[in-house]
Length: 118
Image (cartoon, rainbow, N blue to C red; front, side, top):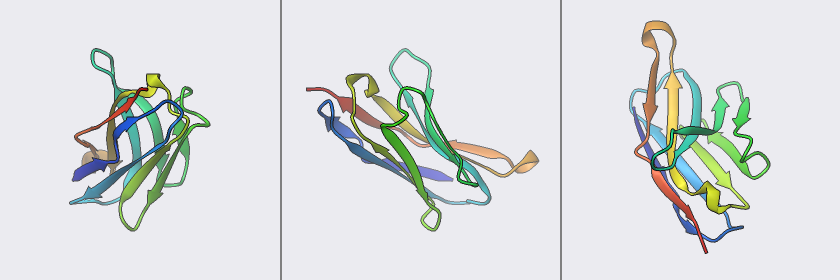
């Protein structure tokens, strides 16, 4: 499975960005797709996830500002980020896990940089 992210970049505080992550390869029975982020020297943290049943989970720091969505036909997950703050600056990673038991696998994208700065 390959995950390819796009949409990162430089944005001013208060601005918006939309990240996309397209999954390809041996995809079957996706459980969760989502986004994590990491700042250099810190642990990777959850931003938002979306289960196959449609449940959304968000980090408290982004609730009300970020929205996750998915196009099942395209195996693509999106992260709409609004009212961006400097503390949102990080490398954002797409995540996918699928299957169960011995067939369970999880995958990460290569990451896309988001910088919020004036």
